[in-house]
Length: 516
Image 1 (cartoon, rainbow, N blue to C red):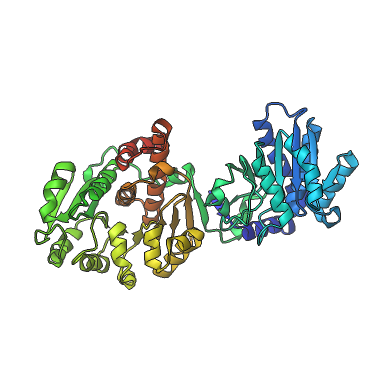
Image 2 (cartoon, rainbow, N blue to C red):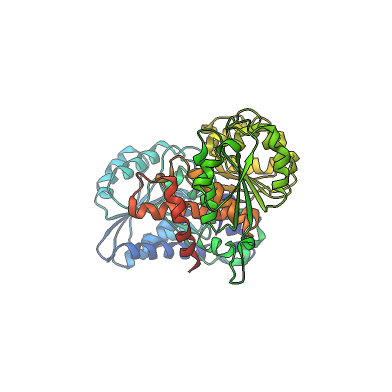
């Protein structure tokens, strides 16, 4: 599913109106009807219900006026409050405002605190509030009077449905502009808005419904849209197929470089996840002195002992043997539990420079690269980096807080600069491509915030690439199914106490659920 920025949506609307000849009033009417449709789904009988509509001075307010008309006609007791002067309303919004006047529906202005205090008693007794204060074009912090109105609404236990976007959200970045309406549902028009699907905005949107308002589908082709929401339709199109006349060699060979003293669990999780995702053959490159651990846990894999001078940390002496192993595989994944001690950096840099197959780099592989990031320019193959915010901060020389402020653009800019696929992990994981494309994942939950889940993701991504998915598709499939595992487990276990091993065992079931 594509997602647009507010500027892109404004361009699409304008093209539909000026070039395709669709009157703006038609689009506004369709938008209003789509919200009314959702309200009817949620309220058994609209007739007699007290519904309060809050309107701003822009087209979002015009939508609210039109919604009020339809609700009134269905028997609702509508109350319309305008957080602006009526004289400020222009264009199609004014047309809908004037219609309300001719119908005898009063629109009450809220222009100061006294007006707001008068309105509070009416708002407090509503069955539903419709938020049409601001649209996607808002910039800067919200004015004091409107912020007080929003804060009052959020304090009340009254359901709120937002028109296009909850008022107070930056539709491009997901930033909260001082304060924000907390909706139980958001009906957004035409196309999904990028900012609705990332944090902190995602905490305020409730269920997000993308409503068709009659914009011809080919209009979007006129715009360079590179933002996408990962959904069921996306993954069904790209998941590698399996065939009855296949064998283990048909589903790829993965070399997983992993392991150090005290950190063997990470590689075991990554390896198991790769196999559970459908991988054909798994080769484990591990410190020679630790092979007994992997042999006893990953009995379905082939263990390749790497020189470690009996320290539990790989040394430069393994580079030549690694080159031989690398020649016979389809993907190399490295980093889980690898450590950054001793010669590990030299080994990682050698792989980056010499690999002839795609690389998936996580954890300590990323930490090593952050010490000499220029090595990425020496790679001649697709590289997937899977940093969490702390690792991303190390790569950029900044703080995790700065990374989290604008995850989309941080990931996008990094991928463009270093020609890599970036999987910026966290709630609403971002997959960024070198061409500027962004994929936002919406699966997953707080129960996955526990050690080892990132290792599981590494194995899954590498496995899907091995099976024939394009490199960026492997990343998309990995993050989607990884989060879906967590969601499925949470349905039975809740979000407390999920461990990484639970995700591994759930993988086949979630894949099956999307193939049916």
